[in-house]
Length: 514
Image (cartoon, rainbow, N blue to C red; front, side):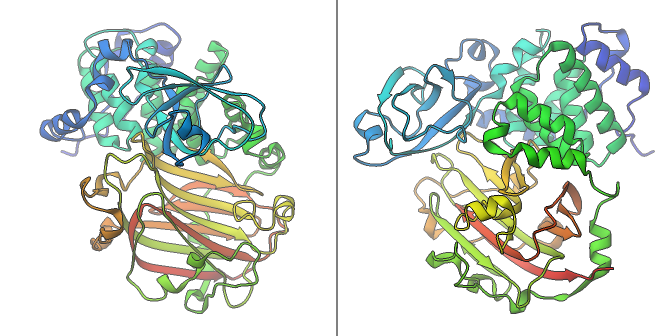
Protein backbone atom coordinates (compact mmCIF):
# COMPACT_ATOMS: atom_id res chain seq x y z
CA UNK A 1 0.00 0.00 0.00
CA UNK A 2 1.41 3.39 -0.99
CA UNK A 3 2.07 5.63 1.98
CA UNK A 4 0.14 8.90 1.88
CA UNK A 5 2.20 12.06 2.05
CA UNK A 6 1.56 13.70 5.45
CA UNK A 7 1.64 17.14 3.86
CA UNK A 8 -0.55 16.30 0.89
CA UNK A 9 -2.90 14.40 3.13
CA UNK A 10 -3.52 17.29 5.48
CA UNK A 11 -7.22 17.69 6.17
CA UNK A 12 -9.23 20.90 6.36
CA UNK A 13 -9.71 20.18 10.06
CA UNK A 14 -5.95 19.93 10.55
CA UNK A 15 -5.53 23.19 8.66
CA UNK A 16 -7.95 24.88 11.05
CA UNK A 17 -6.01 23.36 13.95
CA UNK A 18 -2.78 24.96 12.71
CA UNK A 19 -4.32 28.41 12.42
CA UNK A 20 -6.00 28.03 15.80
CA UNK A 21 -2.68 27.06 17.37
CA UNK A 22 -0.95 30.07 15.85
CA UNK A 23 -3.64 32.30 17.31
CA UNK A 24 -3.28 30.77 20.75
CA UNK A 25 -5.79 27.89 20.88
CA UNK A 26 -4.48 24.35 20.50
CA UNK A 27 -7.12 21.64 20.03
CA UNK A 28 -6.29 17.98 20.52
CA UNK A 29 -6.34 17.27 16.77
CA UNK A 30 -3.22 19.42 16.39
CA UNK A 31 -1.11 16.46 17.66
CA UNK A 32 -1.27 14.85 14.18
CA UNK A 33 2.25 14.65 12.73
CA UNK A 34 2.36 16.41 9.35
CA UNK A 35 6.10 15.92 8.82
CA UNK A 36 8.05 12.88 7.61
CA UNK A 37 11.32 11.42 8.83
CA UNK A 38 13.07 12.02 5.49
CA UNK A 39 16.49 10.70 6.54
CA UNK A 40 17.60 7.79 8.68
CA UNK A 41 18.89 8.13 12.21
CA UNK A 42 22.50 7.73 11.07
CA UNK A 43 22.38 10.67 8.61
CA UNK A 44 20.42 12.75 11.11
CA UNK A 45 23.01 12.16 13.84
CA UNK A 46 25.87 12.93 11.45
CA UNK A 47 24.35 16.33 10.72
CA UNK A 48 24.02 17.00 14.46
CA UNK A 49 27.65 16.01 15.05
CA UNK A 50 28.79 18.55 12.43
CA UNK A 51 26.72 21.38 13.93
CA UNK A 52 28.17 24.06 16.15
CA UNK A 53 26.87 22.89 19.58
CA UNK A 54 26.13 26.47 20.59
CA UNK A 55 23.47 26.64 17.85
CA UNK A 56 21.42 23.58 18.82
CA UNK A 57 21.73 23.54 22.63
CA UNK A 58 18.69 25.38 24.08
CA UNK A 59 20.61 26.66 27.11
CA UNK A 60 23.45 28.04 24.98
CA UNK A 61 21.04 29.61 22.50
CA UNK A 62 19.23 31.36 25.38
CA UNK A 63 22.50 33.05 26.39
CA UNK A 64 24.00 33.51 22.92
CA UNK A 65 25.88 36.82 22.49
CA UNK A 66 25.27 36.74 18.73
CA UNK A 67 22.41 38.54 17.00
CA UNK A 68 19.93 36.39 15.10
CA UNK A 69 20.57 38.59 12.07
CA UNK A 70 24.04 40.06 11.67
CA UNK A 71 26.75 40.78 9.11
CA UNK A 72 30.09 38.95 9.06
CA UNK A 73 33.36 40.52 7.97
CA UNK A 74 34.74 38.30 5.20
CA UNK A 75 37.91 40.23 4.39
CA UNK A 76 39.85 43.25 5.67
CA UNK A 77 42.16 45.14 3.32
CA UNK A 78 45.68 45.43 4.67
CA UNK A 79 46.46 48.96 5.85
CA UNK A 80 42.85 50.16 5.48
CA UNK A 81 41.09 52.01 8.33
CA UNK A 82 39.30 48.79 9.33
CA UNK A 83 42.63 46.97 9.57
CA UNK A 84 44.24 49.76 11.61
CA UNK A 85 41.26 49.71 13.99
CA UNK A 86 41.74 45.98 14.63
CA UNK A 87 38.77 44.64 12.73
CA UNK A 88 39.38 41.06 11.56
CA UNK A 89 37.71 38.58 9.23
CA UNK A 90 35.08 36.60 11.10
CA UNK A 91 33.90 39.43 13.35
CA UNK A 92 30.16 39.99 13.26
CA UNK A 93 28.59 43.43 13.06
CA UNK A 94 25.71 43.77 15.47
CA UNK A 95 24.75 47.44 15.13
CA UNK A 96 25.60 50.42 12.95
CA UNK A 97 25.05 53.88 14.44
CA UNK A 98 22.88 52.36 17.13
CA UNK A 99 20.57 50.40 14.81
CA UNK A 100 20.59 46.64 14.09
CA UNK A 101 22.82 45.91 11.10
CA UNK A 102 21.16 42.75 9.88
CA UNK A 103 21.93 42.52 6.16
CA UNK A 104 25.14 43.29 4.27
CA UNK A 105 23.20 45.04 1.49
CA UNK A 106 22.07 47.76 3.92
CA UNK A 107 24.43 50.55 2.88
CA UNK A 108 27.12 52.12 5.03
CA UNK A 109 27.71 55.28 3.02
CA UNK A 110 31.34 56.28 2.54
CA UNK A 111 30.42 59.93 2.98
CA UNK A 112 28.68 59.34 6.33
CA UNK A 113 30.44 61.63 8.85
CA UNK A 114 30.16 59.07 11.66
CA UNK A 115 30.25 55.28 11.44
CA UNK A 116 29.91 53.68 14.87
CA UNK A 117 29.89 49.88 14.73
CA UNK A 118 29.45 47.33 17.51
CA UNK A 119 30.98 43.96 16.54
CA UNK A 120 31.40 40.57 18.21
CA UNK A 121 34.46 38.33 17.89
CA UNK A 122 34.03 34.99 16.08
CA UNK A 123 34.03 33.03 19.34
CA UNK A 124 31.54 35.41 20.97
CA UNK A 125 33.82 36.31 23.88
CA UNK A 126 34.59 39.92 22.93
CA UNK A 127 32.25 42.77 22.03
CA UNK A 128 33.99 45.87 20.76
CA UNK A 129 33.03 49.32 19.46
CA UNK A 130 34.65 50.63 16.28
CA UNK A 131 34.53 54.29 15.28
CA UNK A 132 35.17 55.51 11.75
CA UNK A 133 34.86 58.86 10.01
CA UNK A 134 33.93 59.58 6.39
CA UNK A 135 35.62 57.58 3.64
CA UNK A 136 36.24 53.98 2.75
CA UNK A 137 36.68 51.54 5.66
CA UNK A 138 38.26 48.74 3.60
CA UNK A 139 36.43 45.50 4.31
CA UNK A 140 34.09 43.02 2.61
CA UNK A 141 31.10 41.38 4.27
CA UNK A 142 28.49 38.67 4.02
CA UNK A 143 25.41 37.73 5.98
CA UNK A 144 25.81 35.90 9.31
CA UNK A 145 22.42 34.57 10.30
CA UNK A 146 21.58 32.57 13.38
CA UNK A 147 17.82 32.12 12.92
CA UNK A 148 17.73 29.60 15.76
CA UNK A 149 18.07 32.57 18.13
CA UNK A 150 14.51 33.53 17.17
CA UNK A 151 13.00 30.06 17.57
CA UNK A 152 12.61 29.49 21.29
CA UNK A 153 10.57 32.65 21.80
CA UNK A 154 8.06 31.51 19.18
CA UNK A 155 7.19 28.06 20.51
CA UNK A 156 5.78 26.55 23.65
CA UNK A 157 8.89 25.24 25.42
CA UNK A 158 9.27 21.52 25.99
CA UNK A 159 11.35 18.40 25.24
CA UNK A 160 11.18 19.30 21.54
CA UNK A 161 13.26 22.50 21.87
CA UNK A 162 16.48 20.96 20.51
CA UNK A 163 14.73 19.49 17.48
CA UNK A 164 13.27 22.89 16.59
CA UNK A 165 16.73 24.46 16.78
CA UNK A 166 18.12 21.70 14.55
CA UNK A 167 15.29 22.34 12.07
CA UNK A 168 16.10 26.07 11.90
CA UNK A 169 19.83 25.50 11.38
CA UNK A 170 19.30 22.74 8.80
CA UNK A 171 16.82 24.83 6.82
CA UNK A 172 19.20 27.78 6.77
CA UNK A 173 21.93 25.51 5.42
CA UNK A 174 19.75 24.12 2.62
CA UNK A 175 19.26 20.69 4.23
CA UNK A 176 15.50 20.47 3.97
CA UNK A 177 15.34 16.71 4.50
CA UNK A 178 17.19 17.10 7.81
CA UNK A 179 14.91 20.01 8.76
CA UNK A 180 11.75 18.05 8.06
CA UNK A 181 13.10 15.07 9.99
CA UNK A 182 13.77 17.33 12.97
CA UNK A 183 10.24 18.74 12.71
CA UNK A 184 8.90 15.18 12.61
CA UNK A 185 10.81 14.31 15.81
CA UNK A 186 9.64 17.51 17.52
CA UNK A 187 6.02 16.77 16.68
CA UNK A 188 6.40 13.15 17.80
CA UNK A 189 7.56 14.46 21.20
CA UNK A 190 4.25 16.30 21.57
CA UNK A 191 5.06 19.79 20.30
CA UNK A 192 1.78 21.56 19.47
CA UNK A 193 1.23 23.23 16.12
CA UNK A 194 2.55 26.78 15.97
CA UNK A 195 3.43 29.47 13.45
CA UNK A 196 6.83 27.86 12.79
CA UNK A 197 5.32 24.51 11.84
CA UNK A 198 2.81 26.34 9.65
CA UNK A 199 5.64 28.24 7.99
CA UNK A 200 7.83 25.21 7.32
CA UNK A 201 4.98 22.97 6.16
CA UNK A 202 3.79 25.67 3.73
CA UNK A 203 7.29 26.03 2.24
CA UNK A 204 7.57 22.25 1.90
CA UNK A 205 4.23 22.17 0.09
CA UNK A 206 5.47 24.87 -2.27
CA UNK A 207 8.63 22.89 -3.06
CA UNK A 208 6.57 19.76 -3.71
CA UNK A 209 4.27 21.55 -6.11
CA UNK A 210 1.22 21.36 -3.85
CA UNK A 211 -0.03 24.79 -4.82
CA UNK A 212 -3.51 24.64 -3.28
CA UNK A 213 -2.19 23.67 0.15
CA UNK A 214 0.69 26.16 -0.02
CA UNK A 215 -1.60 29.05 -0.98
CA UNK A 216 -3.86 28.16 1.94
CA UNK A 217 -0.86 28.18 4.27
CA UNK A 218 0.19 31.59 2.96
CA UNK A 219 -3.28 33.00 3.67
CA UNK A 220 -3.15 31.58 7.20
CA UNK A 221 0.21 33.21 7.84
CA UNK A 222 -1.19 36.52 6.65
CA UNK A 223 -3.93 36.21 9.26
CA UNK A 224 -1.41 35.41 12.00
CA UNK A 225 0.88 38.35 11.20
CA UNK A 226 -2.06 40.71 10.81
CA UNK A 227 -3.11 39.88 14.34
CA UNK A 228 0.49 40.28 15.60
CA UNK A 229 0.66 43.69 13.89
CA UNK A 230 3.97 42.98 12.13
CA UNK A 231 5.76 40.55 9.82
CA UNK A 232 8.70 39.20 11.85
CA UNK A 233 12.08 39.11 10.16
CA UNK A 234 12.38 35.34 10.65
CA UNK A 235 9.66 34.70 8.05
CA UNK A 236 10.53 37.31 5.42
CA UNK A 237 12.65 35.21 3.05
CA UNK A 238 10.16 32.35 2.95
CA UNK A 239 7.30 34.78 2.39
CA UNK A 240 9.23 36.31 -0.53
CA UNK A 241 9.41 32.86 -2.10
CA UNK A 242 5.71 32.15 -1.58
CA UNK A 243 4.59 35.53 -2.91
CA UNK A 244 6.70 35.14 -6.05
CA UNK A 245 5.66 31.53 -6.57
CA UNK A 246 1.96 32.46 -6.52
CA UNK A 247 2.12 36.02 -7.93
CA UNK A 248 0.93 37.67 -4.73
CA UNK A 249 2.72 40.93 -5.51
CA UNK A 250 0.57 43.02 -3.19
CA UNK A 251 1.64 41.05 -0.14
CA UNK A 252 5.21 40.92 -1.48
CA UNK A 253 5.27 44.72 -1.24
CA UNK A 254 4.06 44.50 2.39
CA UNK A 255 6.75 41.95 3.21
CA UNK A 256 9.46 44.07 1.62
CA UNK A 257 8.16 47.10 3.50
CA UNK A 258 8.53 45.06 6.70
CA UNK A 259 12.10 44.38 5.70
CA UNK A 260 12.51 48.14 5.66
CA UNK A 261 14.60 48.43 2.52
CA UNK A 262 12.11 48.27 -0.36
CA UNK A 263 12.77 51.80 -1.57
CA UNK A 264 16.55 51.34 -1.40
CA UNK A 265 16.80 47.85 -2.89
CA UNK A 266 13.85 47.55 -5.21
CA UNK A 267 12.10 50.33 -7.06
CA UNK A 268 8.64 50.71 -5.59
CA UNK A 269 7.20 51.54 -8.98
CA UNK A 270 8.36 48.13 -10.19
CA UNK A 271 6.34 46.34 -7.52
CA UNK A 272 3.38 48.65 -8.15
CA UNK A 273 3.64 47.73 -11.83
CA UNK A 274 3.50 44.04 -10.99
CA UNK A 275 0.40 44.64 -8.87
CA UNK A 276 -1.27 46.60 -11.68
CA UNK A 277 -0.32 44.12 -14.38
CA UNK A 278 -0.14 40.54 -13.08
CA UNK A 279 0.84 37.67 -15.42
CA UNK A 280 -1.63 36.85 -18.17
CA UNK A 281 -2.12 33.19 -17.32
CA UNK A 282 -2.07 30.95 -14.27
CA UNK A 283 0.13 28.23 -15.75
CA UNK A 284 3.87 28.26 -16.36
CA UNK A 285 5.37 29.71 -19.52
CA UNK A 286 7.77 26.79 -19.87
CA UNK A 287 5.60 24.46 -21.96
CA UNK A 288 4.55 27.24 -24.35
CA UNK A 289 8.13 28.48 -24.70
CA UNK A 290 9.44 25.00 -25.53
CA UNK A 291 6.67 24.40 -28.04
CA UNK A 292 7.46 27.64 -29.90
CA UNK A 293 11.26 27.53 -29.62
CA UNK A 294 13.34 27.56 -32.78
CA UNK A 295 16.92 26.48 -33.50
CA UNK A 296 19.72 26.84 -30.98
CA UNK A 297 21.38 30.25 -31.29
CA UNK A 298 24.13 29.62 -28.72
CA UNK A 299 26.86 28.36 -31.11
CA UNK A 300 26.89 31.74 -32.89
CA UNK A 301 26.96 33.87 -29.74
CA UNK A 302 29.75 36.38 -29.18
CA UNK A 303 31.03 38.85 -26.58
CA UNK A 304 30.54 42.36 -28.04
CA UNK A 305 33.42 44.62 -27.14
CA UNK A 306 31.35 47.72 -27.84
CA UNK A 307 28.88 47.10 -24.99
CA UNK A 308 29.73 49.65 -22.27
CA UNK A 309 29.92 47.20 -19.37
CA UNK A 310 32.31 44.84 -21.20
CA UNK A 311 35.97 45.35 -20.51
CA UNK A 312 37.17 42.89 -17.89
CA UNK A 313 39.43 40.17 -19.22
CA UNK A 314 37.13 37.36 -18.09
CA UNK A 315 34.06 38.56 -19.99
CA UNK A 316 34.70 36.29 -23.01
CA UNK A 317 32.43 33.43 -24.07
CA UNK A 318 35.33 31.13 -24.97
CA UNK A 319 35.03 29.03 -21.80
CA UNK A 320 31.62 27.74 -22.93
CA UNK A 321 32.23 27.07 -26.61
CA UNK A 322 32.80 23.34 -26.09
CA UNK A 323 30.77 21.07 -23.81
CA UNK A 324 31.11 19.76 -21.25
CA UNK A 325 32.74 23.00 -20.04
CA UNK A 326 34.52 22.92 -16.67
CA UNK A 327 35.58 26.03 -14.75
CA UNK A 328 37.01 26.31 -11.23
CA UNK A 329 37.07 29.73 -9.53
CA UNK A 330 38.77 30.23 -6.13
CA UNK A 331 36.94 32.01 -3.28
CA UNK A 332 36.98 35.82 -3.53
CA UNK A 333 37.80 35.59 -7.23
CA UNK A 334 35.31 36.52 -9.95
CA UNK A 335 34.87 34.90 -13.36
CA UNK A 336 32.32 36.74 -15.50
CA UNK A 337 30.98 35.92 -18.95
CA UNK A 338 28.75 38.09 -21.13
CA UNK A 339 27.49 37.26 -24.60
CA UNK A 340 24.78 38.08 -27.14
CA UNK A 341 23.21 36.28 -30.08
CA UNK A 342 24.26 36.97 -33.66
CA UNK A 343 21.01 38.80 -34.36
CA UNK A 344 18.98 40.72 -31.72
CA UNK A 345 16.59 38.47 -29.80
CA UNK A 346 13.56 39.65 -27.83
CA UNK A 347 11.81 36.39 -26.89
CA UNK A 348 14.08 33.56 -25.84
CA UNK A 349 14.43 30.47 -23.68
CA UNK A 350 17.89 30.08 -22.11
CA UNK A 351 18.58 26.62 -20.70
CA UNK A 352 21.66 25.54 -18.70
CA UNK A 353 22.27 22.02 -17.37
CA UNK A 354 25.16 21.87 -14.91
CA UNK A 355 26.69 20.50 -11.72
CA UNK A 356 28.79 22.34 -9.16
CA UNK A 357 30.78 22.16 -5.96
CA UNK A 358 32.26 24.74 -3.62
CA UNK A 359 35.90 25.43 -4.44
CA UNK A 360 36.88 26.99 -1.11
CA UNK A 361 37.70 25.27 2.20
CA UNK A 362 34.76 24.90 4.58
CA UNK A 363 36.23 27.30 7.16
CA UNK A 364 36.89 30.28 4.89
CA UNK A 365 34.98 33.54 5.34
CA UNK A 366 34.14 34.17 1.71
CA UNK A 367 30.73 33.69 0.22
CA UNK A 368 30.33 31.82 -3.06
CA UNK A 369 27.75 32.51 -5.72
CA UNK A 370 26.84 31.44 -9.24
CA UNK A 371 24.61 33.88 -11.14
CA UNK A 372 22.77 33.74 -14.45
CA UNK A 373 21.11 36.96 -15.67
CA UNK A 374 19.13 38.26 -18.64
CA UNK A 375 20.46 41.69 -19.61
CA UNK A 376 18.72 44.70 -21.19
CA UNK A 377 21.45 45.11 -23.78
CA UNK A 378 20.19 48.37 -25.29
CA UNK A 379 19.63 50.05 -21.89
CA UNK A 380 15.95 50.63 -22.72
CA UNK A 381 14.65 50.77 -19.16
CA UNK A 382 14.95 53.92 -17.05
CA UNK A 383 17.31 52.20 -14.60
CA UNK A 384 19.57 51.02 -17.40
CA UNK A 385 19.69 54.45 -19.06
CA UNK A 386 20.76 55.96 -15.74
CA UNK A 387 23.71 53.56 -15.37
CA UNK A 388 24.71 52.10 -18.75
CA UNK A 389 28.03 50.76 -17.43
CA UNK A 390 26.51 48.89 -14.48
CA UNK A 391 25.64 45.35 -15.53
CA UNK A 392 23.19 44.89 -12.67
CA UNK A 393 21.29 48.06 -13.58
CA UNK A 394 20.89 46.49 -17.01
CA UNK A 395 19.69 43.17 -15.60
CA UNK A 396 15.98 42.36 -15.93
CA UNK A 397 16.00 38.94 -14.26
CA UNK A 398 18.63 36.97 -12.35
CA UNK A 399 18.93 33.55 -10.74
CA UNK A 400 21.68 32.87 -8.21
CA UNK A 401 22.84 29.98 -6.07
CA UNK A 402 24.37 31.36 -2.89
CA UNK A 403 26.56 29.76 -0.22
CA UNK A 404 27.19 32.33 2.53
CA UNK A 405 30.07 32.29 4.99
CA UNK A 406 27.58 31.71 7.82
CA UNK A 407 26.39 28.46 6.25
CA UNK A 408 23.28 29.90 4.61
CA UNK A 409 22.56 28.18 1.33
CA UNK A 410 19.73 28.91 -1.04
CA UNK A 411 18.32 30.31 -4.22
CA UNK A 412 18.24 34.06 -4.79
CA UNK A 413 16.24 35.91 -7.45
CA UNK A 414 16.28 39.42 -8.84
CA UNK A 415 13.82 41.02 -11.20
CA UNK A 416 12.61 44.27 -12.73
CA UNK A 417 14.33 47.29 -14.25
CA UNK A 418 17.57 47.79 -12.38
CA UNK A 419 17.21 44.22 -11.12
CA UNK A 420 17.15 44.21 -7.31
CA UNK A 421 17.70 41.30 -5.00
CA UNK A 422 14.75 39.47 -3.53
CA UNK A 423 16.19 37.09 -0.96
CA UNK A 424 14.37 33.78 -0.72
CA UNK A 425 14.38 30.68 1.40
CA UNK A 426 13.82 28.11 -1.29
CA UNK A 427 15.22 24.64 -1.55
CA UNK A 428 18.93 24.59 -2.33
CA UNK A 429 18.94 21.44 -4.48
CA UNK A 430 22.71 21.49 -4.79
CA UNK A 431 23.33 21.38 -1.03
CA UNK A 432 23.71 17.61 -0.86
CA UNK A 433 26.18 17.74 -3.73
CA UNK A 434 28.35 20.53 -2.36
CA UNK A 435 31.59 18.94 -1.15
CA UNK A 436 34.50 21.25 -0.50
CA UNK A 437 38.27 20.66 -0.31
CA UNK A 438 40.09 20.57 2.97
CA UNK A 439 41.70 23.69 4.50
CA UNK A 440 45.09 22.76 3.01
CA UNK A 441 43.86 22.58 -0.58
CA UNK A 442 44.11 25.88 -2.47
CA UNK A 443 40.90 26.75 -4.28
CA UNK A 444 42.57 27.28 -7.66
CA UNK A 445 43.62 23.62 -7.72
CA UNK A 446 40.19 22.17 -7.11
CA UNK A 447 39.11 20.10 -10.12
CA UNK A 448 35.59 20.80 -11.35
CA UNK A 449 33.07 18.11 -10.48
CA UNK A 450 32.53 15.14 -12.73
CA UNK A 451 29.20 15.10 -14.46
CA UNK A 452 26.64 12.94 -12.69
CA UNK A 453 23.86 11.25 -14.60
CA UNK A 454 21.15 13.51 -15.96
CA UNK A 455 19.08 13.14 -12.79
CA UNK A 456 21.91 14.69 -10.79
CA UNK A 457 22.26 17.80 -12.93
CA UNK A 458 20.64 21.13 -12.10
CA UNK A 459 18.40 22.26 -14.93
CA UNK A 460 17.92 26.05 -15.06
CA UNK A 461 15.68 27.85 -17.55
CA UNK A 462 15.20 31.61 -17.95
CA UNK A 463 12.40 32.67 -20.30
CA UNK A 464 11.34 35.97 -21.79
CA UNK A 465 8.05 35.65 -23.68
CA UNK A 466 6.06 38.74 -24.64
CA UNK A 467 5.94 41.07 -21.66
CA UNK A 468 6.78 38.45 -19.05
CA UNK A 469 9.81 36.77 -17.52
CA UNK A 470 9.84 33.31 -15.94
CA UNK A 471 12.61 31.46 -14.10
CA UNK A 472 12.43 27.67 -13.70
CA UNK A 473 14.68 25.31 -11.75
CA UNK A 474 14.39 21.61 -12.55
CA UNK A 475 11.23 22.46 -14.54
CA UNK A 476 9.59 24.06 -11.49
CA UNK A 477 8.65 27.75 -11.84
CA UNK A 478 10.28 29.98 -9.21
CA UNK A 479 9.01 33.32 -10.45
CA UNK A 480 6.85 34.78 -13.22
CA UNK A 481 6.70 38.57 -13.45
CA UNK A 482 6.01 41.32 -15.99
CA UNK A 483 8.90 42.91 -17.90
CA UNK A 484 9.21 46.41 -19.32
CA UNK A 485 8.04 46.14 -22.97
CA UNK A 486 10.77 48.62 -23.93
CA UNK A 487 13.37 45.87 -23.45
CA UNK A 488 13.86 44.61 -27.03
CA UNK A 489 17.33 43.04 -27.19
CA UNK A 490 18.54 40.50 -24.63
CA UNK A 491 22.09 39.83 -23.49
CA UNK A 492 23.22 36.89 -21.32
CA UNK A 493 25.46 37.09 -18.27
CA UNK A 494 27.15 34.52 -15.99
CA UNK A 495 29.14 35.29 -12.83
CA UNK A 496 31.01 32.67 -10.80
CA UNK A 497 32.58 33.38 -7.41
CA UNK A 498 34.17 30.44 -5.62
CA UNK A 499 32.42 27.57 -7.40
CA UNK A 500 33.80 24.74 -9.50
CA UNK A 501 31.20 24.07 -12.20
CA UNK A 502 30.75 21.72 -15.10
CA UNK A 503 28.18 22.71 -17.73
CA UNK A 504 26.95 19.79 -19.80
CA UNK A 505 24.68 21.78 -22.08
CA UNK A 506 23.69 25.39 -22.74
CA UNK A 507 21.17 26.48 -25.36
CA UNK A 508 19.47 29.74 -26.36
CA UNK A 509 16.42 29.35 -28.58
CA UNK A 510 14.36 32.17 -29.97
CA UNK A 511 10.65 31.85 -29.24
CA UNK A 512 8.60 32.38 -32.35
CA UNK A 513 6.03 35.15 -31.92
CA UNK A 514 2.36 34.48 -32.70
